[in-house]
Length: 200
Image 1 (cartoon, helix red, strand yellow):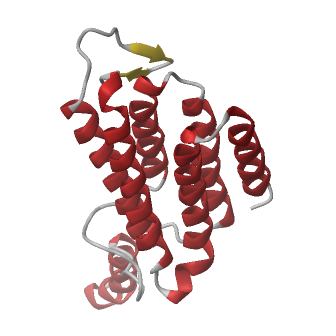
Image 2 (image 1 turned 180 degrees about the horizontal axis):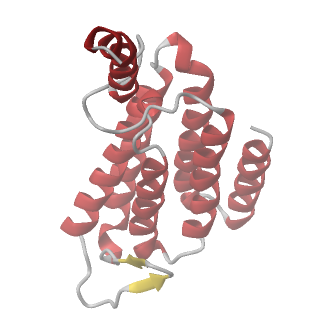
């Protein structure tokens, strides 16, 4: 085969190989540069986050008050981790991470070193001083309220999913506030919240 014929045969093959090895361009609206995949909004992801928040809150509510707030910290950590790497949920992830961060700080500032750690699976809960519970509770409620506001101010194309996550955050906030209600009212509040989230 002559040199000219060889060039004619191999050049298209080389070009095709080079094209197959080139990176796929980032589409408009997708995030690039972080190395994390952008999977987009989905009902499955949103339902998973809502479930983590709602069921986690139910379990934390069963903890003694002094351990409850560190339990919530773990719930928000798990929920935020569920969204890690998904650019479509970046604002939601950041809002949930902010709740976790604030709870971590306030628990550390008011920790009760005389009490042992509580363990649940791989999670370890730190107790706060009994006298600090009202203060820690106020901080927790404020953190949840701020996260809810961020979620409700999401872009129009994200509102359907972000609003559902915001509703779960709001339910957590209501559950925390209901700790001051008489026992019967607490049970009623929990029943209403659980029923709402299961149909979300």
